[in-house]
Length: 119
Image (tube, rainbow, N blue to C red; front, side, top):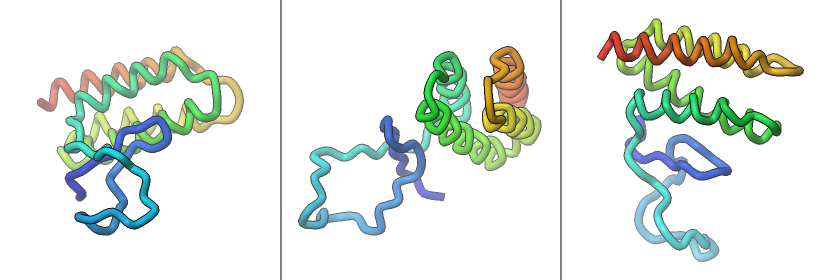
């Protein structure tokens, strides 16, 4: 797994650039947006905050990216019950139409409890 992550409004996930070192001629990135991969607890808090404001499809897409990263990290740390709760939250989020906020928050709270018990 990559050790550098990008966390911007447009993208949340592993750094997908192929090479380190010099930047391509037209790369306009002025500063390095990468950081070490966040911990599971950090990702879960981030998902919970993101769930409070899901007005646009862009907000849903961004939350789905963070949820995917949290599921991956939960499985990597052998916190499978937490990963299952996050997968249920992702299914709730992907349902077309209105989001059941109470169910989504319940799954996220359950995932946080499983992660705390696993730590």
